[in-house]
Length: 368
Image 1 (cartoon, rainbow, N blue to C red):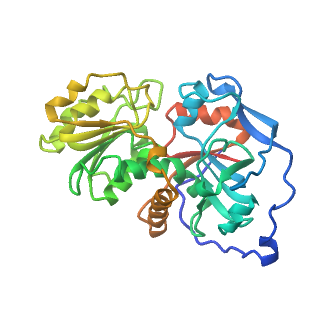
Image 2: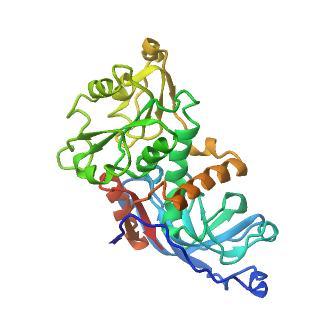
Image 3: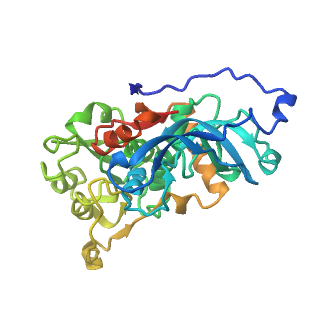
């Protein structure tokens, strides 16, 4: 594997395709098979295996074929691999990719999509050399944004965007407090910065091993926790986080709590809420949140939601609006993306193990 520092947004000189070149439907003759990281049986990371002769997807009406340069590794990919979120077997892992358009259907061409366009997307099957993507799911990548950064933006960036802009149902206003767990990891690094852009005051939690990264996120208060012995994960029992939150907020609590940790933090999150605050539970990094009686919320007339990205990108307009804001913040320097590590695709299992061990201080990718 090879590591990358936090990436800058640098201008690129892009040669324009000639009209003759743009008229071709294929960049070249696509191979009949390709390399892909495939799950044939659910289980641990070793069930994600490289195959060199997996069938290349066929181009269907309304689609393009993307030749992937990068694929994002996300916790939801590990849930699919384990069988926590069921999928039909076998399947190619991943649902976040970026690269260049290699083949275009007539319908996609009519929308102005051309061979060689730089794009990012979120559909199943990104851990592969080629992925078939509906044209409506493509995000054109601005010339000023590098492809690894753009790939990082699709799942984690869009997730952070809907969490800080929409899923809280406007129950938090500018100048009010927001607690975000695990700001040393990928999605919540984005969320902490976006919450500040939205004008919220932010309390972030992180482990001592990730404090250096988190200091640059702009949190108004950073709660630094010991690590669970032998891991890189925060020990949420090493400090009375609720007491600290109440101290920082003058006893009022937080109008929104963004929690991708799950089982280890559910009690902390609910108890840190302000009157009529909202608990946004979006992940299971420490295990699934156990069922709890709704009467737990009565003390503060609190709210809880368990959102997912698909419900906040329900149409092309919403998807593009979110992506345009993110790319705009990147270009303006208001949002910084840390690409932690990039694994070659033939180290597919190692990529999952690295993420699940809690070692990442930013986005983890495969280079393809």
